[in-house]
Image 1 (tube, rainbow, N blue to C red):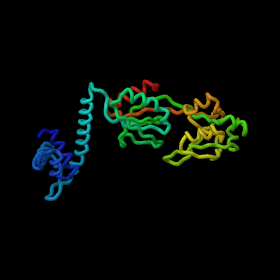
Image 2: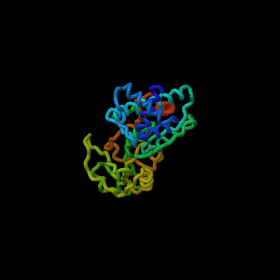
Image 3: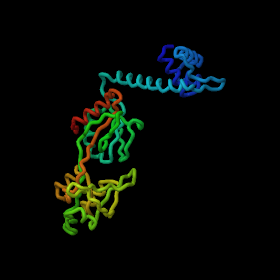
Image 4: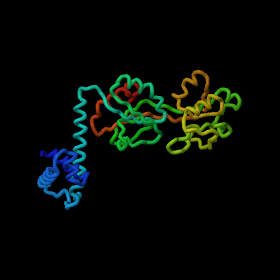
Length: 295
């Protein structure tokens, strides 16, 4: 048995705590597993297992060695997958995390699916800050920058919020000219589904934050119902500019306090940087950056 096979035998034995089970998984006898590990211990000059008639447990040296071996085997599996993909059409499952404003990207994602039909696209929409490494995402689109040495990041443009209301509402209740006038208006508020916290309204006056208490006249955990109520003349809502572009152009909504709302937000695409990305990840990154990317 070569060194690589011996490492596999060691890892399987450590994970199952059984030479017999390790042999079953590897398709060899338990005695072959035991001999491979004995030769490995001799080569290393260290005992890897405490052995008894009923069980095996890792020594301190064995626990240290296990972590190294698991990383070696993982890197081997990754390299094998990369080589098998070389020169082939990008394919396989691609798990992508998206913010709740992900509908903004749907026409790009649809175009990607048409361009790469062999890729199985799995999308997860959430306002939660996911841990893409631990949760197994291949790529994630997030709002704002992320400082994580394990991830590579490219910007996919950005957006800002605008305060809007229907012309009929403003005709009836008046147009606020200063943030301090908002407490006398019907305010439609957004609540984050995962945390239950209300989104703040980023108001400024002459470059300084304006600290006022915004009424909670209506609360929703989605922007679509808030926009529908704003267009119906219920009140004033804070909404992403891309979501209301058509409504503004068609006159269903008007902007208010434009000079007092300053909150440009970057949209970033992230993917693991610890290795050369698989072809399916590279295809997704290149496609999205070509359509939306900026430096």
